[in-house]
Length: 370
Image (cartoon, rainbow, N blue to C red):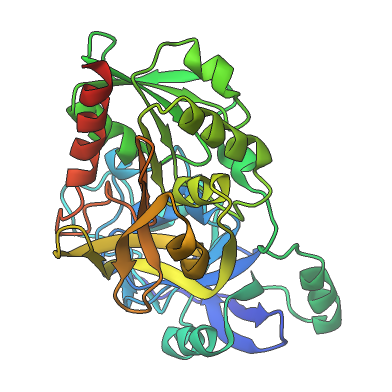
C-alpha cells in the first residue's frame, strides 16, 4: 500500500459551521445539497444509487465505507443519485469476492465527489440537534465569503420538486409479458428492487414518467397501480396527486411507497410537512397496528404526513406507526382499495419483515379481478 497525500476539504453548513476533512482520491471537487445522514452499517451502494436521495449530501455513520466494493447487480438506479458523500474512514481497497469495482472507481464513474476523515459523530450530532440544512463539500475554500454566497443560492428542500429530475423520460417494461398480473408504476424515483419484488410475484410492470395522466396509464389495462418512492417535497406534485385521486375515484388497487405514501395522503386532503432531520437507516422500528407485530424497516424520507389530520379523517385508517417518534408509517383507505407505507418494504435491511406488503398488493389485485 503506497503512501498517498490527499487534499484538504471542508463541509460548510448553511449556518456557517465548518467541519474539516480530506478529499477522497486526488481530485479537486465541490458538491452542494441538503446534508443528511444514514445509520446503516451496510448497503452503501443501495443508498448512493437510491433516487430518493437525489439532491442530498450523504453522511454515513458507519466508521468504514468502501470495504466491500460495489456490484452492479445491487444498484437501485443506473448511476449514483446523491450529490456528494461524507464519511469517516474511506476504504480504497476491498476484499469482497463478488465485487466488480472499488467504491473509489464507482464514485469516479458516477462523477461523485466525496470527502473523508470528517468527525462524522460530531457532524451527525449537529444535524440531529439543529436539523437538516443545505451544505457544500469542497476542496476550494480560500474565499469563504464567495463560498457562503454560492451556498445561500442553493434552493431549500422544503417546497422543492425533484421527481422530474429522476423519473424515466419514456415508459419502459420490467418483467415477463406472460406474467399473471400487470401493474402500472408511476415513476417519481422508483427503486429497481421494487420492480424486482413485483416480478418475483408474477407481475409485469410498465413504468410511466412522473407526468403521465391516469387516462394514459389506464389504456394499458393494468390490474393495479403503484406510486413509487422519490425525492423532494410531495406538495408541488399536483399532477401526481391528481393521478392518485383518479385511481381512487375508480377504486382500483393502489399501493404507495414513501413519496407515493405522501401523495396518497395529499390526495385525501391530509397535509405533509418537512421533518427536523428525517428518518434514514435500515434499523427503524415500526408497529403494525392491525396485527400488533413489530417490524424492523429501512427508511429514507425527510417529509411525513400529519398525524392529527390523518387520525381525524373519516375514510383513512392509520395502520403503522414509527416507534421512535410515533410518526405515521402506514395508512389504509377504509372505503377504497388503497394502502401505503412510509418505509421501504423492498429494501431487505437484514430482516424481511415487510415483504408481506407486496403479497397484500397482489391479494388486492386478485380481489379486483374476481
